[in-house]
Length: 79
Image (cartoon, rainbow, N blue to C red; front, side, top):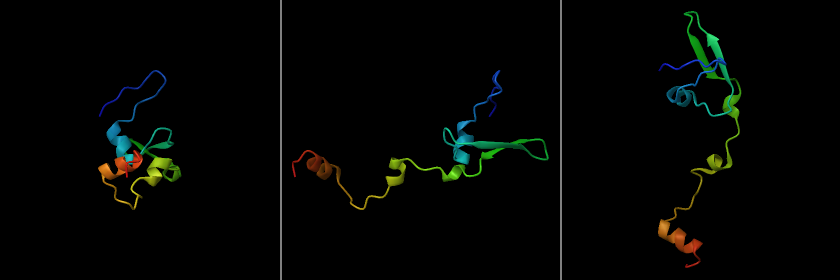
């Protein structure tokens, strides 16, 4: 996955890499160089503890199984 270095020394981290590391916009990352001279990138310490947004925190938590028609009737005050 080649990428281009900008004049400011910036690169775009490919989506496959961001997804594999769980990186999100604004998350800190650390870089290193291993013994083979390869650059290593990883999520910075503590970045995994970032607060989830309110929707992510609630996703999958409902204990009522609504059918679409029942929910729409309730919302439209047709029940």
